Length: 263
Image 1 (cartoon, rainbow, N blue to C red):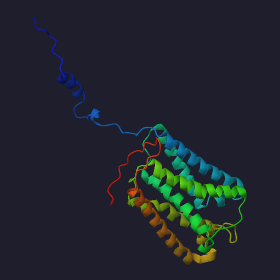
Image 2 (image 1 turned 90 degrees about the vertical axis):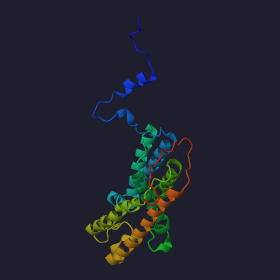
Image 3 (image 1 turned 45 degrees about the vertical axis):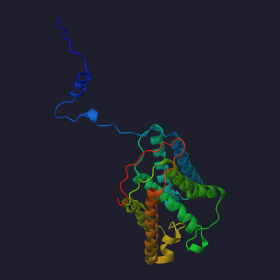
Image 4 (image 1 turned 90 degrees about the horizontal axis):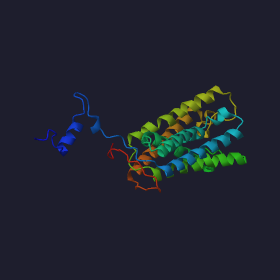
């Protein structure tokens, strides 16, 4: 008698798998699962330590401050808070193997902390700039200042170089990143206008001091700084696109989906 069981062939085995999709519905088997790029423990630890550095600096400044409202009005503190949040979030995602944060977010944090470091070292700590804020600092203030103006900016730059793939920044990000620095201007001016004349720290920075420069002078300073910040943002985008891929040990850089150079 002939065998009633049909012979098993590769085609016969593959057929049921192909026919499991219901008519009218997308074939879920054909959609690849998103790749997280694997766990990146070295990057996670580095980012966690960088976030901790920012937290320590902010806490030290808070301990030594007699006016928390004035303290948290500084761009330095605000940009470091942004960096701490981004670093902590990025560390968690790297440790758990989740995809990297959007370069629009990480790039914004990088720009803001670079502004903090560069303005401090080349403007506020430079007696020849005309806007210096050199004054006596307590030991706690000195440590906090180095952590928030030097350590965290360097950590952000190193993180970008060692633990991210190049080419992720788009040129349109440059002007998008400027939204926060531009909004900081009316924040500082409105806050100063609400405080009584002669209040210590009425305006957070000398180049925003209406009592010294008047509103016309502040407008000129704002344009100069805005152009400088935009140039810095463009430089970060360009450098990110032309830099070589540097792999930190065990970093497993996630790949990016950046567009062409003129995107």
